[in-house]
Image (cartoon, rainbow, N blue to C red; front, side, top):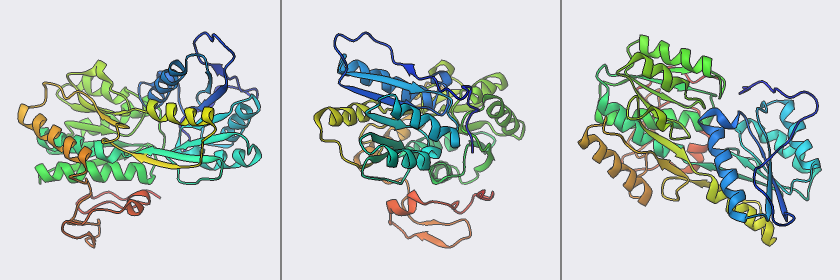
Length: 358
């Protein structure tokens, strides 16, 4: 479950955000990162948002961050150190930080905590996440429309509902446009490991996949696909546009900056309260990167129409009829999935042949 080995020793160094301050900052905002800001994906986008938030407040807010913090006891130590350093609000940006965040929050009731992708809250702990499955639906549509081998590979990270939702959403929408499509899933049990991600991409390609999707943090699968040639990929969490127009034909982009600005403003105003936020394309938390000219015009138009319908609420990516993998009915004709089912999703939909790991 660890994303990356902690490079720091017992003394955890806190990195100061950039920027000169014209006045003493009123708030210090801390960030705990699972990987390095240069990963090109998940942590990169959180760090870009941190910088935008800091610039927005023009000296009123100072930011600090700790990178490469594993989802282990090291997380609790890193969060504790950040609270002791004077942070007024701390954003912990990975699912596995959930219990460490709660433990530290109990010890520091005057510090505000924000946990990304989790579900446990407290008086001084909020949760926030994005409806990534909405973007997966669009990727699935493009993937199913463009594959020539009918084999799509999926590099999965950690078997939590967030990742399972994404696999199901991509598969459902690939299958809608191409009934012959097959998914092969490789679980890495890590979020960020470029070597493993590259090896997984190569294995999927060697097995005939000409489309590779990923729910991991680095650009290594993009590089492996570019090396192979004639393989389609999608940017994950960040645009990964350096690999456009091929293999990267579009992307899911996480935009955390508005949320960070809003939550830090609440601390400045003294109005911060524990909340749960789960936004998607319509609210702008999930962006769809440029769909390149490598995608046929009709497929691009369909994908953009799907995006607009999801954004407006006209269409929900999990709309029945949908059965579970064992053939039992999950959603009847026209029925949409309740958030509770999605938040706890631990099953594949009918047609996927792999097993969900424990």
